[in-house]
Length: 117
Length: 115
Image (cartoon, rainbow over all chains, first blue to last red; front, top):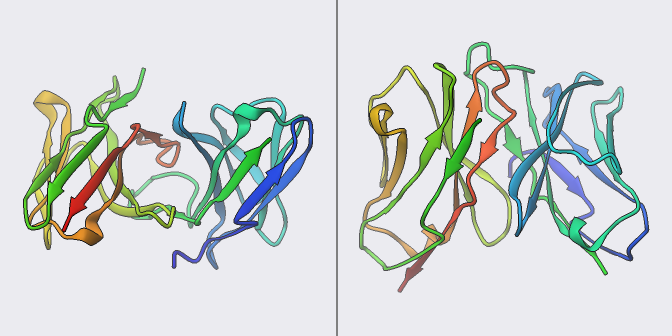
């Protein structure tokens, strides 16, 4: 158990809908990262938040957005869903925001499997 | 541009055999980090190792070993005396030093260990 909790574990929804994925980081971790794992694109970094602020952005679509709340949990909002958005969405957390020392790890949750039908 | 290539999409070996998973990376950065993650059938990603670009020493952890060769831009992973529990998808990944967690993953190698 990595200590990172993602809910729900599975989600099935229709095209055009909007869903929210939730992530609770490990206790004490300030950074949250979102990744998408799909058959076509593999595992891709979407976005990072550190202590409530956006820190880095990857290949995140405009239809997707995220936020990190004062209690450090994070939500990934996916809207106008398309069939191609079906994927496993991972959240990871770490203590720091950048690898100054490289001594901290990113711990991954079990993922939310999203199926768009 | 940064890129990680895991040319082996799927590998099957019989239990107790040794197996090596290949990873080749591309980066223009002089300092960077390389990772291996394991994704068992349950789906979570499990961190295995991180290596920075200045440390070319090979590493051994139990039945796992890693061979980092900067000259060939490779970071290969060997499992010795494989076990059925090693069956998983293994991802090699790369990140820039400054943004260590903006990790770029390879497509993964699915490893089947047959009893």
